[in-house]
Amino acid sequence: MTTYTYHVGEKFHADGSVRQYPGSTIICFADPESALYQAGVSVQNALSAQPFGHKFALLPPSSFHMTVFSLILDAQRVLPLWSAFLPVDTPLAQMDQFFIERVATVAPPDNFRMCMTYIGGKGLSFRLSPADEDTYHALHGYRRRISEATGVHYPDHDTYEFHMTLAYNLIVLTDDEKRAFAEWKLNLGEALRCDVGVFDTGAPHLTFFDDMFAFLTIDQGDLLRSRG
Image 1 (tube, helix red, strand yellow):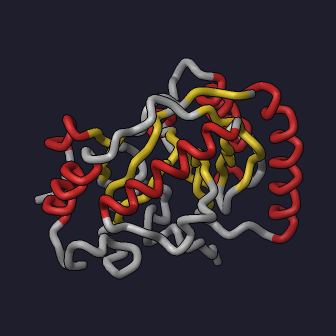
Image 2 (tube, helix red, strand yellow):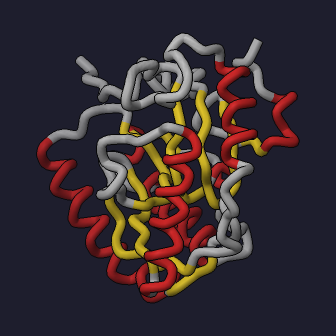
Image 3 (tube, helix red, strand yellow):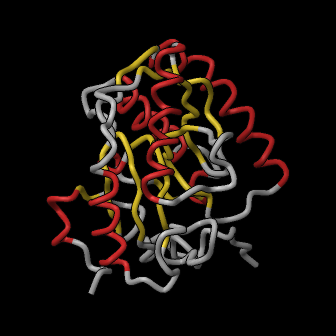
């Protein structure tokens, strides 16, 4: 009998197809020309070649990003995972407009200098850290101002781990697979740290999504299917 992780029925169907899971977030898109993006594609290919690779759902590279500030999820309409400024039953379209107005009051940094520290996550992701003190203060200062402007303040606000997700684990791994997966990530991470090095994220963007496969900017809002 196949045992699935909590991602099945949440973000994905059992067959690996993506489920509707709408929300909004502030992200930095991965540059397709960057070493980070190319490393992500390479790691996804390597995962698919593993004996347990079929137990994961890969994200399309076009969705690669670093989350700067998580806003809301339609599936989590409860404080403190919602804006303290609006009722938890506020329609998504209204929440989108609210965030467009509030986020615009906070001047975004032009860029963050980041580095990859290791491969981690319950599925598969690159863990990312500020590359210098200036970036650390710029990143956390921006997050603080966004929280104040939007009324969103997650419990892990001060301990949030920056990352770029590559895949979600859909089928529970056996104990042997867990050990093999952990060793595989450790060995691969050692090599990739040198390959990726320090990279620029560019400016953060307010985005909206129907699911985990695409993150749309403000000017693409008419493509959203979940705001009807």
